[in-house]
Length: 494
Image (tube, rainbow, N blue to C red; front, side):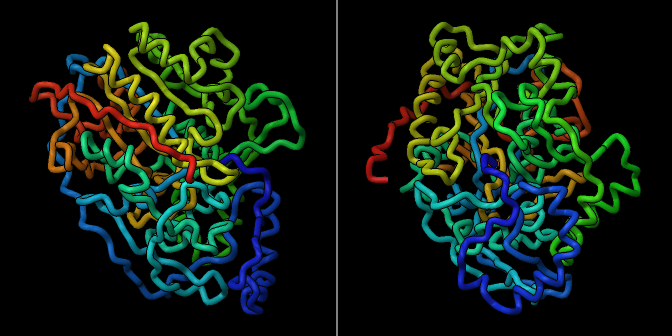
């Protein structure tokens, strides 16, 4: 996500030095030249992919999750009056919850041999994760396709910097006690997918608009300009011109995405459809609908960060609605003053609070940020009518074993960890009475929840078809108002 331009970052590695790999790269260089110019700063894989002739290889997984529960009826009469959409950064479900009892998790991952053999690699154990990762991993649009590999879920080691198997690590209860305690008490959604293959900028557009206007990449700029998105006229990115694509184009693109690893030139064929665009767009957003309907809302996020999606919406950034975009710590004051709006987006600041791996970010410190803000929510007067949905914006290059549905040319992408918290979440067999929800969700599901609660029409086909998180709630029982008193961790040793 927040990486400087550099599509061919290739750290020294014994597995990169073979003559066979070098020969494969030379042979495919011509096909990649145009794609390199098109996606000059996007994280790419360290080398090739896989062919359709590969044999299958299946890792061991944890016990599968339960079937999806009977959905709750959600509408304006539902007791939920506040929704907080909390979006962190760059982790997969198996990375955070792969060993959670009863969840659909994995403890072993599949790999590819990233050379001209294009053959299955060995299955490898997911090793203990550190709080401070040594580096970021490729997790943009193309690395998402490479990792998924048409549903084989075996290409995660072939993304940029993935050769050292940093992406094949996972936390557990001892290292993520805060999030596992929340899963014990509330709902852990184990089929919650990211809305697209990556990376952060377009994923965050989905969290406010149920689309990205076809944008497939993060921002790129040739100058160090003050501001971001609509405040930086030098920022450009790539997009599918979705308004001009025919049904035949869409079918072709989706076919190429399903076979991205079969031929290195398939990236070039996909990229031929991309066009340049400013990182300042005008698309309808859920905040627009809320404002028009007189429903209170705020977007708690710092300006000029990668994750501030509303700074990229021209009519919001340059209009009166920008006053609704406020610093994350403002929500603490609003909770204390009992002025929490009906709908909130809570976007942690850059660095450890958002848990984006690399650059010295400490996941332990990120959990402590969550403790501070969630405790404030749980202890507020608003809590008895609140639902908090906590996700991570993309897979971050980390292994996940579940094949995402292929809805359209944008995704879905690999699973995100997802916690749904409310006095009205469904009870089950988790240690503190929580449950596992295996309904298929994506970021647009949160928008659909908000729309159903307030009688609003959907924005796009994505939120129109999405489940409104109905499998996570049970309104037939009295609310359970006891909450865990989360404790901050001592992160000094990490």
